[in-house]
Image 1: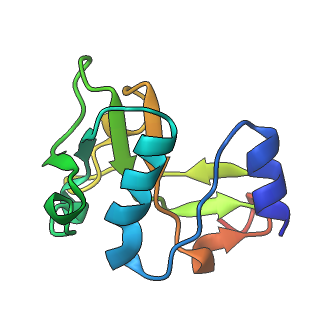
Image 2: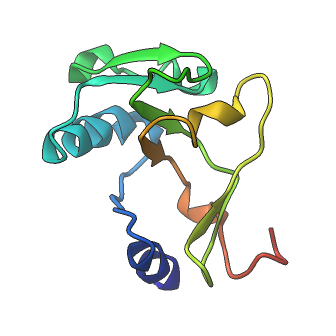
Image 3: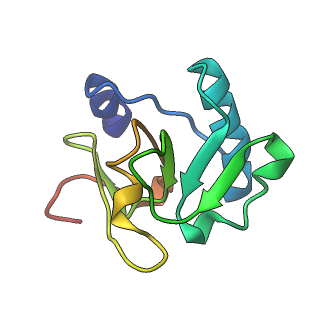
Length: 119
């Protein structure tokens, strides 16, 4: 898939999961693989996921300068570039993606679009 190739060329790591309920486990595996702390800040809309069951401490709020890992959703992925597109709002604070050193984005496969024009 072109999106995966382009995202890898940008230095992104991609993991595929089946359903949003599998996200905390995938995040835990990512944190363990990268030898990162299991403490994240996430969008409020992701707060109901079973983070605790995976041993991940997740705070649902906008990121602060001291936060090292941010987990967010994503409006769309652009296949031609591997880029992600975000919309910000009350449940999706903009600071949670660019502020932390590590950003983990959740992108439903159905939101991968061919080009920027489609998004």
